[in-house]
Each structure stands twice: as C-alpha cells, then as structure tokens.
Length: 180
Image (cartoon, rainbow, N blue to C red; front, side, top):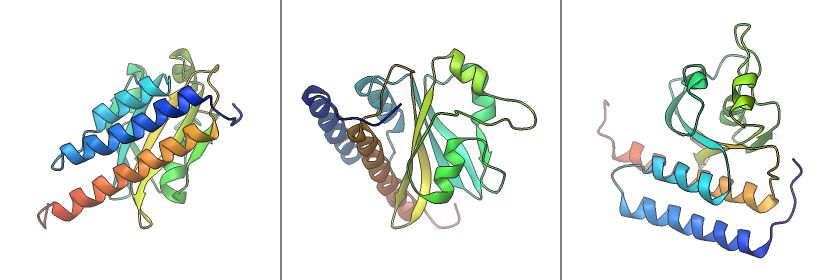
C-alpha cells in the first residue's frame, strides 16, 4: 500500500467529507458525533471499518466503532499505553504522529488478532491522533482492504479529521465540570 496521488473526483469527495465533519461538530457542540464521523469516513474513503479511542488514565478506551469484527472487539476495547504496543493506536497515542500499518496487530498474551482482522477484510490500518497543542485525547483508526491504496491526500484527510476531533475532545474536557 504505497501512497499515491488521487483522482480529482476522490479529492472533491474528501473535501466534502472534511466540510461535513466540521459541520457535524458545529451542529452538535455538546456531544461528539463520532459514530456519524466514522460511518462517513468508511463510506467516503471506501474503507472496511473504523474505530475511535479516547485516552484516559494511561489507557486507550474504545468509544466508537464501525464495522469492527465482533471477535476483535474485546481484544481492542482497552489498550494500555505503558504495555508493549501490539496495536497501531498505542504507537500513535505515544508518538502523536499518524501511522500507516500493514502488520495489523502483534500478538498479545500469545494471541494474535491478525487472522480475525484479515478475515474481515482488514489489511492495512491508518491511525491518526485526535490531538491539539501536543495533547493526545484519543486515536482514530481506519481499516482498508488490500486493493485500496492510501493516497497522500487520504492520509492528510484522516489526519485533519483527527485534529478536528482532538479540538472537539479538548472543548469537551474544558466544558466538563471539575471532579468528573
């Protein structure tokens, strides 16, 4: 999966998706419309699935998903940030940088999730931090089939959506009453 240039129709579709995400966040200031964002990304980018993690107390907690294989949900539900990274979301949360991963998942406790993900058509993962001003609030992970290439514009779109979601999570944290 080598980054390449997109055709103009794909670029227009991606621009429209970015505008739609910004509008969703504007229309729903009190709640994060993450389910709608994931569905839109899967559709517009022709992905096979997506998930979103929230970073809390040294862990990544799965708080939204679209088309994640049922057998994988328990394995992906909570990822510790201080453990050896077995999933791309952990590495992205630590580095604060987007990453394209072709390995899918390392084994954890002697169990590999890779066959389950590949069986569901997941052959590449693109993860982007939901971050603003150096604070990673979560991680967005998109899954692609083997025929899909990841143009540089697609990677940039997912990174931009991650930034918008990071802004929304930052705002949510600021509005949350203290002690919650």
